[in-house]
Length: 264
Length: 301
Image (cartoon, rainbow over all chains, first blue to last red; front, side, top):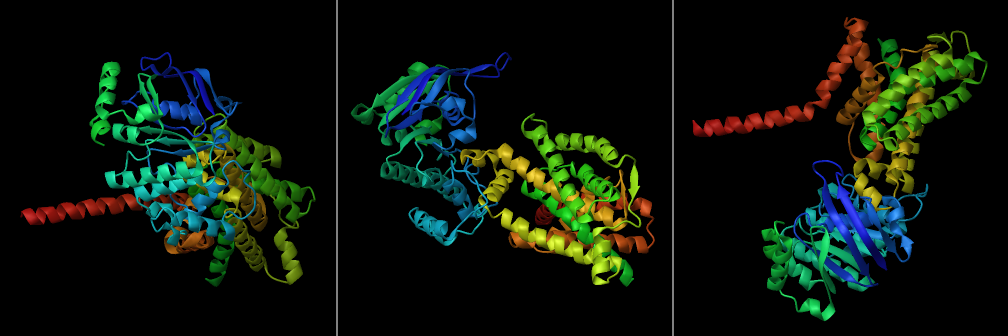
């Protein structure tokens, strides 16, 4: 499935602000893996996701998806295989376009954009059912501009857009961090439902240790641009927040552990 | 007076095509594209050159459009591939076009007096005077373009262009090449501006290398007037409001000139109008802050 080999990423190389964000990271995902990726600020979690998505180019190493060299493609070409949800609820949708127009853009991910009409009657019927499955009442507001939605609604919509055309790999980059706890829970549950229903392979970055233990079948902890823990299946579900904190403190050094990781 | 108004309407219709072009770059792509100052002259120059050489005036408009798209392509490539800031990319193409326009005309201005233009053809055909034939042709082209643009921006490709101006990050995540989308938008925008320049040159019977100076400000003034006065409901009404905005601008100008403002002060007047219109949101903000602090002072008093 996803095969990351010896990935290194340096920000601002050769300057006083040089930072080694990824230090020789290797990670292999099996089909159907739901990996939660945890670590402190600046551990390299989001950088790893952004390297896979093509936002950043690595200094060395390789990224393969199903045997294809992903890292040789530009960001928009990689999008054919990837579904992405971002931390900022404003980032995943076009605010001045309608809900159905946003969905139509997502439905044609990986396809050539032609001069055919953007939102067809068939699209609308399909979107109606999909939106109804979110349970937010958005199916009655399909021609409303996304600008008018709340952060949680926008994030749920982005999640739907990311999975509308089943991606080979779903990348969730702290996608609930900007939401209030109740909404965050709801979006997380939606994410889990989509992942299990569609049998998706997923990498989810989170700050929250409890979520990292509760969701997914595999937990990866990063610190200083390295992977310091990678546990699977039954072993993962036996983990406790205390154990994670201990492991984290032993490795992280001066790296900040935010309250959010424990309480959020 | 009626003659002045009709003249303003006819000129407004021709400039409304340019305003639609500015709407695409400024509102849809969210780019202040200064290329248009050069492309409006480019369209005029191409038409003047082709007509003088004995070519069909309608065909010359087609070439004007194509020439404009080429200018938009250059700005787009400078911005996306060479990463030059959008504003500067536009300025570079605009300056380059000054020389190109001189080359096309071979002189700094060309007269089209007593030559066949699209309007003289319509006048002969329908037996109308010049102003009426400008209104008929300008109106047909402007309204036709509103329909074409409405259709285009509703297609998959057009939606991709709109989304690129709105949120390029999201667009890339949906597998769309934002560079291509931006270039398509800039080509379309400059094509329309150049077409407008060709139509203007044929109506005033001359092309001048200076005629584009300040045109972006005129375009923006028309755009803002259109948006403020003529509705924002729906995309079709926004496009249509560009036509009414351009006409209203021309009527305002005709009126202030008639009231005795020297023509030399026109550009200053337009610039001040646009500066005021663009700063309206800031004034509203200041007013709100003032109201709040006044209320607080009253309470404490």
